[in-house]
Length: 240
Image (tube, rainbow, N blue to C red; front, side, top):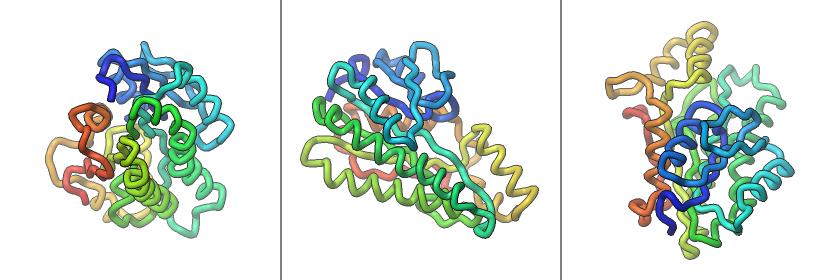
């Protein structure tokens, strides 16, 4: 396992929110960081690689660019989209989009990066959600995709442990990002304020900052976490 400052790190969803904060934290450690996104607004000092995580050809091309020297030490699957709405309003296109980004995307990134992770005993950190562990109404597509990602994490942790590759996931609660703000407005304006209450965390201090999730990702990818694999870390202020 390589030490911080000498690693090749791939972060998806690096143009905003948790992904942006995570890429910046790895950069500050001195790692070589590639930020994958469909938009180029990644942190300074992070190499932008255009990637639609729901498209296999795009994923393969991006991983080939990131692994130019034959290795990927850390793969952080952060990219995601949120879905909220009543079941009878969810279209097939919306269902497919959420699953393409939130579940198929991490699967394809892991599959493509695996030879390069094997080359250096790398590790994988997935960003799932509290919705993947605790039932939530009005989030059928999202909860199903994130529940799948949580189980994908556990299954791969078992499968890859003999090779020394660790696989963990973080399940955030309410994070202070623009997309979460949009969700709260939709819940309180169009759906059920009682559901908004269910998304409130027990601990004081307001919503989780993206860099707090990023710091947890950095820890799980560090040598100090060398004995942690298959962990589904609830980062939700007691919501679950």
